[in-house]
Length: 151
Ligand SMILES: [Fe+2]
Image 1 (cartoon, rainbow, N blue to C red):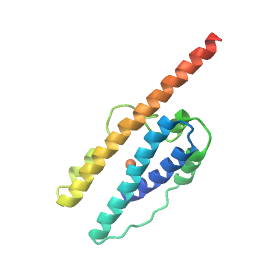
Image 2: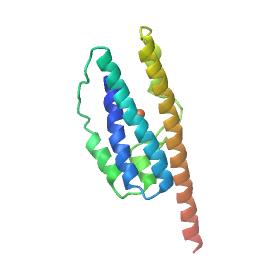
Image 3: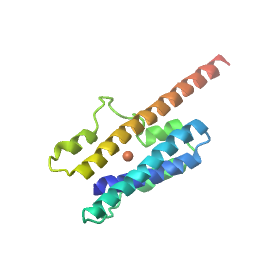
Image 4: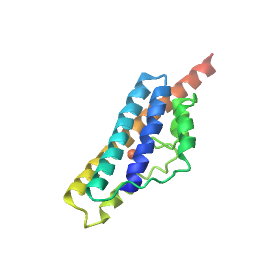
């Protein structure tokens, strides 16, 4: 839970920076909706940890600064997906993720289990939103390249 809370909090900051930087309203809509979810997940998991008697243990992520810089930069949204490995960019496409393994722990209490269930469902939906957005950007890019060739 600690790793999820920290990871989601960082993703929230990265995606918020990207949402501010993009010039596309469509991309902003997707990135901002996922950013809000990530921020809420960070707080929901931190809250649950406090309820269970543990605080959040801060741990540095050596990749965070670099990812934030990419998100804020003026490179294209399509390239951001690739550089940040989001929306299925750089994945092997076998559809597996680490999320299913969370329920391997059979001692999970009901409230924490419910939180994980919602978290997993939202993460997968966010994955679908991001992948749809990345595919649309790739298709746009192809169209632009074709149009350039015709000129
Ligand atoms: Fe996430």
